[in-house]
Length: 177
Image (cartoon, rainbow, N blue to C red):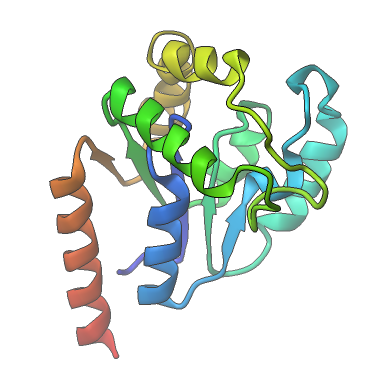
């Protein structure tokens, strides 16, 4: 893959983390999990100044894969990103995958979450966020990341799209090396 700074966006449960991990193994790029730095118990408690200052630091390296939405700092990531992967999977699939991830990690420290933030229940607010994502959050995310930024992008709608992206990336990377 010719791109050095890849931004992965999409609904919770769409597979951003899984895709980032797989791409990282193929490209040998570091992953930045935004939840690790910015996830808080209540989004109302998020310090926007901290998020923006930290984001300026996180985007400095020459190569990275950043996965996560965090609209309040999207502009900073978009300035440095040279490729965007937009996961647009069906809401039911995202809800199912988010719930499966919860079951697998319930009561355990997740590698992509801040130290001490452990999920013990799949709460209604998170379910509502996933259910509302396409209607409320995705239009702005899509406008800012795809339409306004004019960066190269791929929209992923299903597992076949993911498989094609990964196959193409692996083939390009094998040729390069």
